[in-house]
Image (spheres, rainbow, N blue to C red):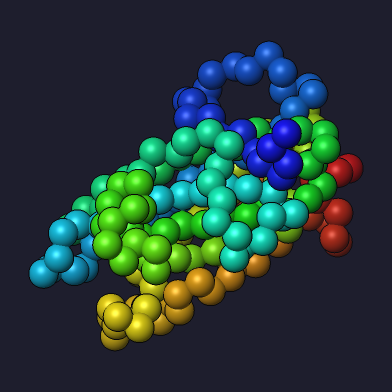
Amino acid sequence: MKRGLVTVVLLPASLSLGCIERNAYLELTVTFPKDESTTQAARYGVVRVNTGDVSFDADWESSEVVPPVRLSRTQSTKQQISVEGREEIETQPVRVKVRFCRDPNCVGINDDHAPEVRYEIERAFYLGKRTSLSLSVDCIPNVPTEMDPMCAIMDQSVVTVSKCSVAGCREGVTSNYCTGNVHFCEQ
């Protein structure tokens, strides 16, 4: 049994999924920064998604393969991922690692110490509902061997995302998807 794993599905958001009543879906968009390095091979953005019962420090992957994204040297790059939640993990936090590796599989030289940003989403799933969230990494984090003075993000920093920042169960655009501390999908 793969405890704590979520299923990641790379599907168009418009595709109808028959199991939506028993499951929940988070439409996650990750925006990677442009690769500013000029002397080394291009980097890849590698996303891993898991539930909050798995420590960030553990070496884990998503239950489904999320393909790496080759970073552009001229512009930011986006990746859209559909993450399925089930009843047993509905209320658990969702953890997302965004790594910046030289090898697309993160197995290259020094990729075991690749820069990484960590996100902990307080709550992303509501059974029978579809939610969405955009995560934007502004720059590749600093690591001791590759200091980029332009990046203020520290390697392995954790960004906490409130459940009220997760879009869902309301039409239109707003910066807060809660009334008080109750998400619109909980009402």
